[in-house]
Image 1 (cartoon, rainbow, N blue to C red):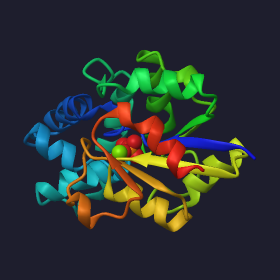
Image 2: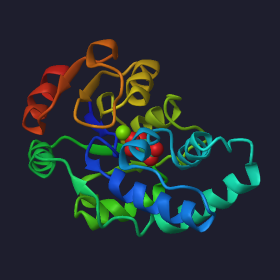
Image 3: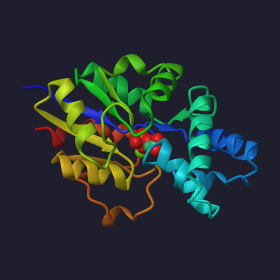
Image 4: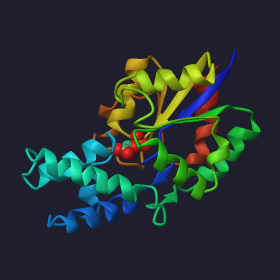
Length: 218
Ligand SMILES: O=C(O)COP(=O)(O)O
Ligand SMILES: [Mg+2]
């Protein structure tokens, strides 16, 4: 019976908000829209690129402008694959992934980031080969918190039992709706207090994750 580990990406394995922020401000500036702070941009991440742009526009009171939204989205997506230079792995991630791989856990990614930029940033950080399956926000017909992308990840891994590791409200809901145990990384982009968010385990240091996975997958 195959047991596997599935990771969210933004705010879980990588701190990508600085790149998303910089790319967003470049496209906003071109259209004469006032720029965003890093904290604002980070708070808009989680539901994929379209919702990110919609949230930017809503923050400027321009959510009704759908043609502008479409232009901004297409400008943003054009920059997204090269937006990797400010992105870093969270502390302990590389060692943790090596440990899990050494322990023969199959690993996968289930993110709302589009698949193209996901592949590019994983390869830029040298960890792409660790993941047998990579599902992005545009890989299936739905995005998290719909359970479909997580269930598709599980199906492609042919896994009987998995743990999902994520940082956000979206991930907690996705895990719950898919009926999958959830490990919450508390140092990502979450806004809800930890005790108000569904989780089976919580951790703030990746050194703790291999033991948590063993416990949740017995
Ligand atoms: O790109 C996003 O909006 C969120 O990506 P995540 O699912 O990896 O957190
Ligand atoms: Mg995330």
